[in-house]
Length: 192
Image 1 (cartoon, rainbow, N blue to C red):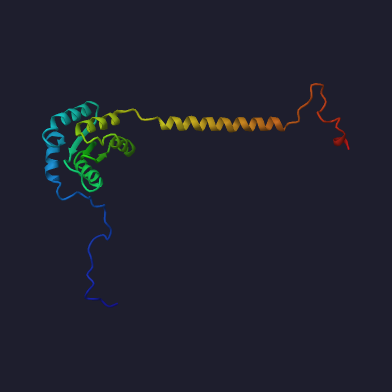
Image 2 (cartoon, rainbow, N blue to C red):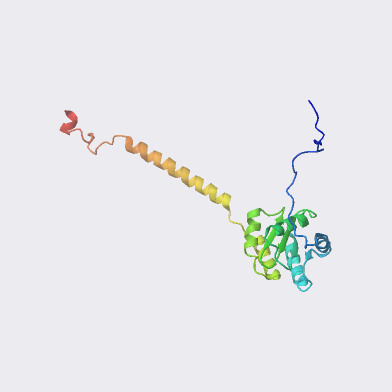
């Protein structure tokens, strides 16, 4: 086998172990992470006290909530989830809410994605304090008991199937008339 001078072996694995995050260059992640580490909130100074109240309410409910507010919208909403993931990576069992005027991004190891998405849907208000309250309320809302519903539906379907089979077996037996004769025995077509 001949070696080509243009071929240079690349050391290490040839696959990307993770997908790169898309965080716009105008977002200072170092400053955001420092503010979140200090207070649990990274936001414009005017809304920090009210957002701290939301963080404290969440803490009282057993939720380690971190809130980041971006003062402008990125071109798409994907960077907000990426920012939430980067911030959340520094905190075990944290739930991170990232808000911009029109978009919401979340990260959590405590709540399922469906709950986070439901919280995101009601948090797109443009008001960061109201959005944070809405998100926290959704996290605290009782979830529909899907497992119980599934079990009940399975029992009902099974009972219906068993009931149908029992009725089928009963109707297949030749019923005797009240006088003991078999219905249709007098029928000349049957005696042929």
